[in-house]
Length: 291
Image (cartoon, rainbow, N blue to C red; front, side):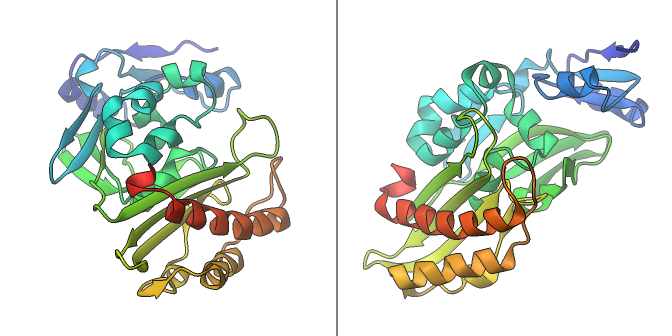
């Protein structure tokens, strides 16, 4: 591994200043689970690494009424998975964090690092898109919020500027009538990334009429896939088996999936159809927020 300069800021202000100075040749490292692999395999060759390890003020989980869950970027995925607060406010999200890789990785990998990497086959992105989460990013120009629907731009690509640091994840409070679910389908080991991951967030009337639906497919393309024309089929309707099948067919038709070692494009199309149905049905059968 070539000589790399290690930058270790002790505040977010110092971090963004260093990043601005080295923006063309520095990479940010948090937990390091993905970065170390890329360095070892010479997929990247930065002249500097900016470590966020000393910014422990970015390691927190809290809830604010009217805003929702706020998770600091340096929070370990395992911490979010087992947090009583996350499990109380959003059980589906806690379950999703628990699907990432294995416990050893989750103890080290961070929430902010997972989103900044934009791994197309990671579990959390599609769930967070369906939940209409957003992130905060800081630079020398100040702070801004980015909806998750706008963060992921392509394979391992985000809308973060080269000199921006992702600092916080915000997940809005669901309404009392919200139901949600996430299902991952793996074709290899249980620790592998999914061939298909499906998230569903439903807002239901007490009489069983669907007010709103968001279904997002992950691991099937370069970014999480949402088919809004299919979602509109559900609004104002009772979610019968026939309608759910129509929605699943629409998702399968609209999404142009990739082929990789976990499944061909043809196979993924079939699995999208199957798991859109199963995920909507699981959300319907769940209590509030996936309980």
